[in-house]
Length: 222
Ligand SMILES: Nc1nc2c(ncn2[C@@H]2O[C@H](COP(=O)(O)OP(=O)(O)OP(=O)(O)O)[C@@H](O)[C@H]2O)c(=O)[nH]1
Ligand SMILES: [Mg+2]
Image (cartoon, rainbow, N blue to C red; front, side, top):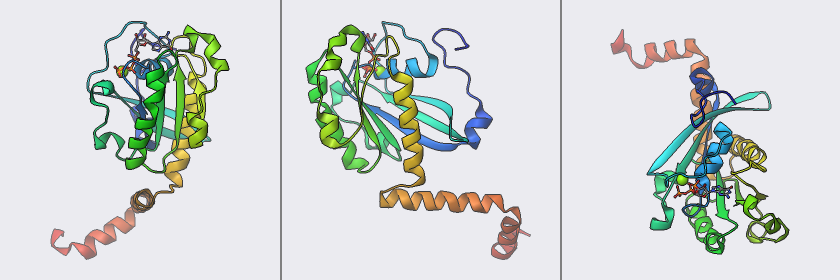
């Protein structure tokens, strides 16, 4: 991928602004590899050592789904181990969630249940997946079965941010599911939001309607 090592490829702002906007969040204990997975997907690079993410990092990205441009905001946060919970604004209007655990630390797998519970309190219907990270450290783990995803009926991926295994596949599938959810939400509030957004777009596409609206509704502006 082009660009300096460690820098995010430059965003095409025009393309981003014209795309369908989706928000994808990442959940999981500290040091499971959330930031490294984003780095691997967005920059195709991985540096072994890095400090814990500070408050919040927002990565903007564009992708093509079908023949449509999609503008994605990836939200990455950190230190959850310290707080065991996220601020509600983190979940606000999210369209998909990637839940990560570290195959080498059992407790991070056990804690998925807590993360999932909190996610569903705020976002009962959005697509979600479980990601088992760091499989490069011990390939034998891929023979083990981790039933949390199956029990909840959500997809499961074995990945490695270090060597890139399954990272692009997982992100691509989650982007597609986020877009599908946004276009066809199963949560009542999201349906209303989508209606409002479509309404807004229709208005923008009809400049004459704007003019008429201005003249009739705000005569004092003339
Ligand atoms: N072997 C191996 N190590 C990894 C992998 N992904 C991340 N790590 C290491 O795990 C540590 C934590 O990775 P981060 O991406 O910073 O973890 P995080 O989940 O963002 O942590 P917080 O920001 O504290 O919430 C780093 O030292 C990484 O090098 C992986 O796929 N394989
Ligand atoms: Mg981080």
